[in-house]
Length: 437
Image (spheres, rainbow, N blue to C red):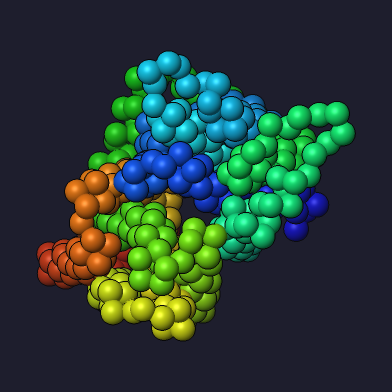
């Protein structure tokens, strides 16, 4: 690999580490403000909405200048969001709820993340030869999974009494830092991680690629995006893989908050300890993903659909657990099944997207659907919590929904097979007359 690739990996690690730690710090900030429980999932809602709204445009922005510069700018936007979280009291107008200020500030961080994503993946195709792209994506995804696990644990540690008290006790000579709570100390620390990522971005080499956007007209970009959206959903294999990954990311984001609330109710865990269970789920996802990559070839990718059904049913069993030693293997099992069924589906989706419209357009459509699913499922979860449904009732509804949806996806695949063999499309090369990209 070229030296610049390792620079990209380092920048991605610190930026993603901060993303995941900041969610925990923002939740802690809402807890310190005595916000209602249904506010917490709205943090992820506000973070994700930029991915959905900006899907047709972020690719063009990423192609408009060297991608290292794009990544630098977007990390500065994330630091701005951290500053807004830190100074939320000063930004809250009279009569305005501080909860809304916190949500909007976290949404600014999501704006930076949405613009960061296409630059992160797009620079790989500019920097590396095609033969190294699969390995490069594997390294990037491995780095991302590692940063998710460590970032979640870091966020939990920063808001814990053990770590926050020394941070709050530390003062610069003759300077009042105005750091008075665990959340504020955590946010300040996390902003440093974004700053490190931004500095590393400055050392990403210019690949020499042309930075010319063929179409800047927003109407054209929206129409082109809509064309690709319909093309992928009409494809017999594209719709199956897209439905599966869309469900996975929506369910995964919701499960983050379900685990936190369930740990509080069933295990009497505070936020700092509950984040450890989130990390355990992420470990399970990594193990399941590696197992799938090793034993499931692309030709048999759809064979993992029943695993999604099983995952939903195992989630339901959470309602019977009251001991951490049962909770840990259960969380690993849930994560393992999730990773095992989503990796082959993601590979299939990338394959069909490349054949139908090109990788860039396919990723944009995938991001739009997956993040829209996150918005919808988190909105429903927040509504159920606001209606004061018990977390056990929510878990049962959630698990049965995941299993039921996966059953319908499998039935749709079997229907497609009866209409004509769609599996023969797997492994086909991109035809010369493929639709526009």
